[in-house]
Length: 350
Image 1 (cartoon, rainbow, N blue to C red):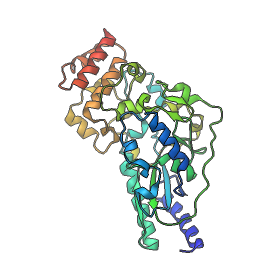
Image 2 (image 1 turned 90 degrees about the vertical axis):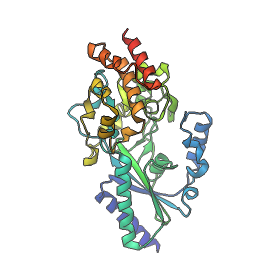
Image 3 (image 1 turned 120 degrees about the vertical axis):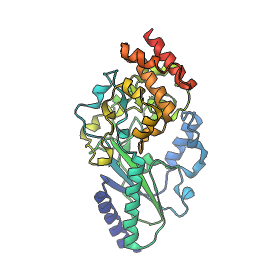
Image 4 (image 1 turned 135 degrees about the vertical axis):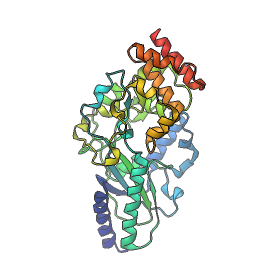
């Protein structure tokens, strides 16, 4: 294709992306040298904890053509994920008998939603130009999503390490199409965090050790989702009522005054999870959990992890007969992991 045709195709791809529900689509090349050096330093400092997959793939994460040979461009897209709610999410953090779940996880698993839309985008491109090389990703392979999004102009990587868009805040999820089409690239986003440190100051476990550096081993999202074993005792009180992920750094970010509520029906909260009682969720049997989390990102820590997390939250909840009874009901659970966290929680109410 000639340069003019490629420019026209790039413009059409962005139009198609909007029609498919993406709020923005950008295009970038594959040069991630700076991001690669930062990643290697982060891994060397062992800030990835038990997430061995972060190092397992070597440079395929930071060199797209090694992951998918022939890749020369990345089509990056973002989709709003914040659901509209009757009251601000931050209020739930002060209501310790309620469960707090990261807002992106309240509806259908974003991996499924965004990957399907990216495939539909690829289908439209293929219908227009014929066969081409591509592969769709949504936080599902060794892909440096945030540096790619920043290079594609979708936003800058903030001090909390999330991508921020000056017109849309940070409440969105990312996806990518790796492609062999030599499309014209967009201008990278520029940093607008300035001297603000709201995200650093609010982090319950001081996981943002310095601007733009996150120690995952301290992060509540890591502790409640990625960590499969026991949550370190020194972080349990700080977890509060957060049973899946943490949004604090986004809740206080000044740029999120521009955030828009999602228009995606798939991201509408299910089963009342946006404001459920901890004791109610703790009583779910495994069958109930399987049924009510079907198609949800909440599946990631497994049922044991679910009970572990809620036990910690109940340990931080107000001491009521209902809370104590819920914990007592699980103190002889067959899982040693669950029993350990229930015992800790009961000690908090002793």
